[in-house]
Amino acid sequence: MTIQLIEKNAASGILQQTGVSSAGVGLKAGTIPVANFSGSPTKQAVVTFTTAFADANYAVTFGIFADSPSGFTPAIIAKSASGFTVDMLTGTLTHLISLDWHAAPYGE
Image 1 (cartoon, one colour):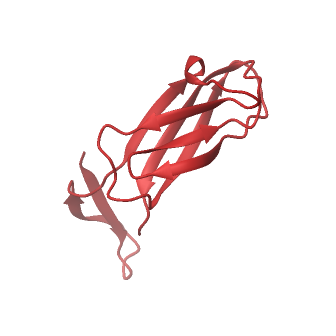
Image 2 (cartoon, rainbow, N blue to C red):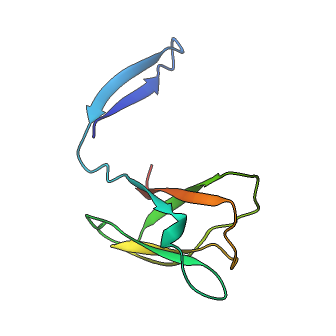
């Protein structure tokens, strides 16, 4: 993955490319199909990264894909360098199709 580094020039106010980075980015993303959730009283799923982070210092964000408006509230209940466990905080996943996730190491 290559990321362009863009900064705003303080004098001119123009955005400009200041460099390109491909090393150490460590972004991860995926999707959890509804069939991968199990458990009672609440539905949970485990995500295991193909390549682990160096440690558990990363953030995870979620995107809910459903066929109808829903009140799903995914929560991380366990996290390690190699992955995390998400709990949907409900036992019924009617209308959920999948849960997209993105993980990125903490930092600037």
